[in-house]
Length: 375
Image 1: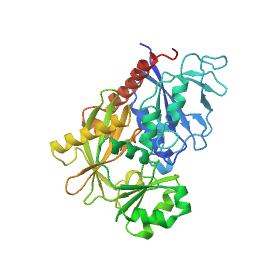
Image 2: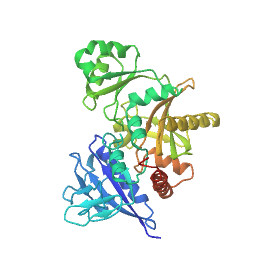
Image 3: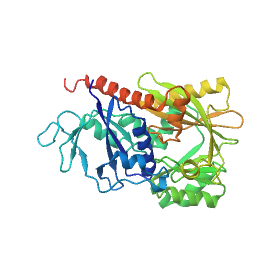
Image 4: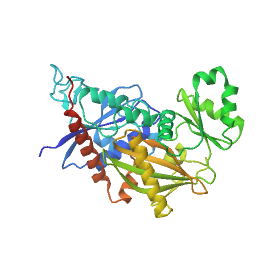
């Protein structure tokens, strides 16, 4: 059986660019070379697609502050009609390479956290080019990325959510005082988040009105829509991974305990301070609580039309109430990320996990290929 050619597309035009580079490294390290042949494509912050070298990615620093693409590599582009003359390759998924022949691609593993990668943009491009890809499609990716729309859909599905307010940049510029007054109704502490980013980029904890206003200002540097959420008394942060298409399954549940000075699961606590958090796997909860979280994770995954993979994050109050925090349709895939760690805890090691994700992508594409495009 010939090997499938997998394009690992990573980096991206996002504040999570560096984390995506580290995630791509872990995916590459976990790829079954007996079955799959990798092609590495990095997208820089200007949006250029560049071939990348395995050796450089594998030998790079695991510190996100030092993660970089090789900018001197040849440019690449996904041909929307790869069988057309001049594409250099036939069949879906041809990558055209400047100065070289095109490369036929069987499946793409997008490792692009945040805007232009996790929000449906690249999923739409790949769908137009007829390329199977790991993870949710355009709809699931878009609604999973936008915390405002995500919360509306989850609310309508009857899932438990923390009290929150959504602010737009237009409303903020026209009436800061009115926006702050609305947000103050949530009480303190409050958490301010850009609506369409992950990895805790732009997230701030506010204990006063001044900190709240400063946090909103800072979040609007990253997005035109901001979420302000009420803090949960006695909060514990729990996470559950989901894997599958039409019949998804949930992993064991893990817990994040933050010891970083930020006082919450910030970017620095996640990726910079090696002692910033402690992971408890499995989480220190009862079997009944774990089953309830797994059920809520699957309901969240289904309500948002997801596929392939996702990590669903929860808050548990000191009194035991559970709330869905958010879903990540391209969760962190670094060596220290919860998604692969939770599946390893559940009996699915990294190589088996990456293999199953690629198989799920191919199965989903095969099923959709039979749909009619004309009457």
